[in-house]
Image (tube, rainbow, N blue to C red; front, top):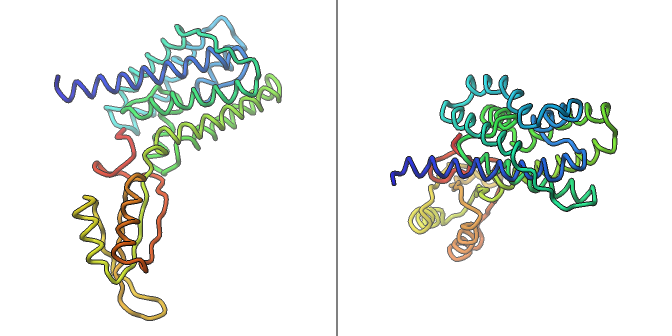
Length: 283
């Protein structure tokens, strides 16, 4: 089996698996409890409540037409075509999967739905496509303005919830807000949280030895920055490297062994774009 075929199968698996989870959350928890979902799924559910004759899956499919025009303009063609496939898979799942989830408490239902739906959306976004909806908008904003995926979803939901509060009740809107909050954090966790990178700044008189160890033993790139001590005026060398969370203890052990007096700053990264060390899916 060729590598390209394996990639196609893997991405279709991600799109299908994520769509199944999202549909399970919608039809198993959200609709029975009369909640609103996130993004365009939520908009489709809201319209469904007003016009029950139209199925949620069909409404979602129709609402996505304008967004796919946006995707064609601003996002890569490969992502666009995979997203069309994802859109049809997700719409079919919404029409087919009707398995009830036995959760009676509305608060627990909102939280569980947020976990399931967020995990499903995150799995979809780990592919090189999407299921349409605000996934496309989220990726456009991430690529152009570095706005986190979950934050875009949460912002869109706030506008959606205002409409839900006026059309239905404030209680429904608040339960849905809980769902949206959990959903947004779950998306961030699945897409970037589990593969978050750490940026490390190191100032040490043994910078050459430390640099060599990172390059040779850890196979990580290092940038050497020329600096100057603000108090002493002495010339300094600052090492800058990006590493995975799992490799961070190795860097700490290396520094303690070579220079325990080294000045080290470890920072979280929002996203890292690179074929070798990057953690952003290649949309």
